[in-house]
Every structure is written in C-alpha cells, then in structure tokens.
Amino acid sequence: MKTQVAIIGAGPAGLMLSQILHLQGIESIVLETRSREAIEATIRAGVLEQGTVDLMKEIGAGARMEREGFRHEGTILRFDGIDRRIDFPELTGGKAVMVYAQHEVIKDLVAVRLASGGDIRFEVSDVSLHGLDSTSPSVRFRQPGGELQTIEADFIAGCDGTQGVSRPSIPKGVLKGFERLYPFGWLGILCKAPPSSDELIYALSERGFALVSTRSPEVQRMYLQCEPTNKIENWSDDRIWSELRARLATRDGWAPIEGEIFSKTVVGMRSFVTEPMQYGRLFLAGDAAHVVPPTGAKGLNLAVADVRVLARAFGEFYESGREELLERYSDIALRRIWKAQRFSWWMTSMLHRFPGADEFQHKVQIAELDYVTGSRAASTALAENYVGLPFDEIAH
Image 1: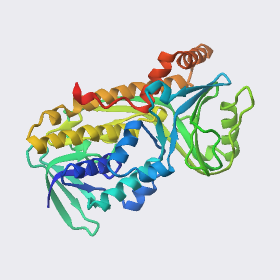
Image 2: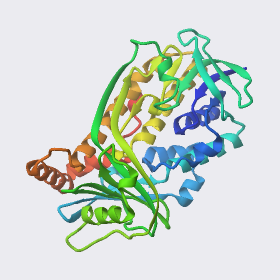
Image 3: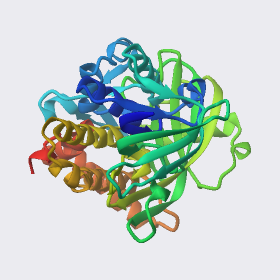
Image 4: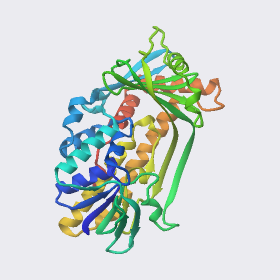
C-alpha cells in the first residue's frame, strides 16, 4: 500500500498530525501497537496551552473540550503559608489554559479522524522502518491477524513516544541526547471529591512539593513529591491525606477536600532532548524526541507544537515542491523545545525540595517565589510561558 506520510503512533502528536494533513489534502496512515480502547483508557493529566486549545477547535476536535474542559485564567503559587495568584489574561493579553486530560484529547482526535475517513491501524506489531535515507522510505508491520504488510511513503513521522521504534531506527552516531534526571518523583492520586480549588495550586513547603489539580466536578487529581523509587504500598490513604494537609497548609487553616482515593501512581522526573529530530525522510515529534518534567505542563503541548511545524513543512512540500521548511524542521522545533525545557526546569527547581538542601536553599526558594509573584515583569514571564509562547518560530 502507498501513502504520502506514514505516521508511527496514535498519541496526541500522531493523531493531530494526521488530521492537520487531512485538512491540507495530504494522505496519511497511522500505525498504533495498542488497541483503541487501550490508548483511550490510559489516564494522563492535561493542561492545554492557549495555542493547543485553538488548534483543537480549528481542526474540528474541540467541541467536547469546550463543554467539559475547565478554562483556567490563573494559577496559585502557595509558599510560606500564603497564596499569590498569577492572572493569565491580564498578563498575556487575554490568554488562558484549559484543564482537559490527555486521554480525553486522544478520544476526540480519534473520533474526528475516523469521522473524516482517516486510516488508523490499531494493534499492529513488528513495526520496522526502512530506506530512511532514500526518497522512498517504507514501513513494515503485521496486522492483528498476523499478515505482514508494507507501506510505501514519501515521508515517515515518528510519533511513537520514548519506547517506540522510530528514534532507535536512526543509525548510531547521528543523534545526540541531552538528559537531566531529577532526584525525586511525583505520587499522583485521583479521588472522589468536589474541587478543593477553582485553580491549580502549586505549593512549596519544607516537606516538599504538592499540587492541587482537578479532573471533573466529582473527581480530583493531586500530587506529592516523593522519592522516585517509592512504592505505592508505602502510601496508605491516611498518609497521603496527612502529607497533603501538611504541605498545603496555610495561615488561615485551608485544607484540601478529602475523598475516596481510587488511583495511585508514582512517576519519575526527567528532561530529555534529542538533536536533530530528523534523519533522511524520518521526522520525530513529541515524546519520541523530547521529555519534560510535568511541573510546567509542557509535554502534550510540545507534541502539538512539533506537528504544527511539521504539518506546515509537509504542506509547503506538496504545494510547491520546496523542502526548505522540512530541512529546517529540527532547528525550528528545537528553539521552542529548549525554551519549554528551561521553563520546566525552572518551575521544578523553584518548587521542589532537593535531597540535601539546607535551610538556606529553602529561604532562597521562598525569596524567588516572593519575587516572581511580586514583580509584574516576573509574573508576566511565568504567565507567558505557562499559557504557551506564540507560534512565530517559522518566521525566524
């Protein structure tokens, strides 16, 4: 079989790219090793930048998001027992974010893609990439029934995450990886309770970081800093609520609304970037090329930003035959990626208790938070990064 762009992976990057290409009149086939049910049931949080929200609506996938998502026009930084609010619209010319889980985004993208006749092959196996340095790359895979198939394409988009086949298919010596491992992780919970806050609360305490988020009017998501090797069984419900109360304590006695905890996970924290993000006719996007700690809420949004650039580059190629944007894809995407890495690293460093840190370091963190929330210039810098930097990289 033949197509113009073969897309490996039906996560946010691959599905978004496929739909944008469809709207540009460009054919694609999406290959995914998991079932549709599995990708739609993998629970992951999501804070969507203004640009991601706008793009979801532009491609026809935003209706449910607008009905069920939570538009947040600010966030709260809690430290030293007090709250300071960052007002996004006031500081960014009206921009905000949408709290809408990543698996809900995937459901919407799958639905709109299939409704427009998209070709998504679920539950494939033995995926391998060939001829990447030629003008006729191909992808081999097995259908769910075991039949071996080959897709001949003009280009391949590797959107299959950190454990996918795309990045390892690039010859050794081509890519350079940049990594930062953080000495802590997040214990995340889902609980049955009404919202504890109208907006996200990022809290620094002497006991470590805590985050109050939301999922729905009945289900809430919260996080605690913990050791990355910590086991779920070490965290009883009572211990979790006790720790959340201690880390989120304010001078006026605020406490989170408690409820039945029905999900607990521990995730590690790392930053990773690979350069370049392309080899021959293969282009990497999303987690296949970079990973950010969740503090800055940039993971899904960077994937969307990547495919926005990549789709425009493919559009230019099929419209005029020019390959200038395709050749510049890595350079353009990496400018935004490194800015997001910087922001995520900064937020993580400012809000977490590092092993071995002394009282001096904690006081410095308090002073930094006091400055960030007390200076309009510093508050604006945080707000601009949080709601998403403008998509003007292609002009440079």
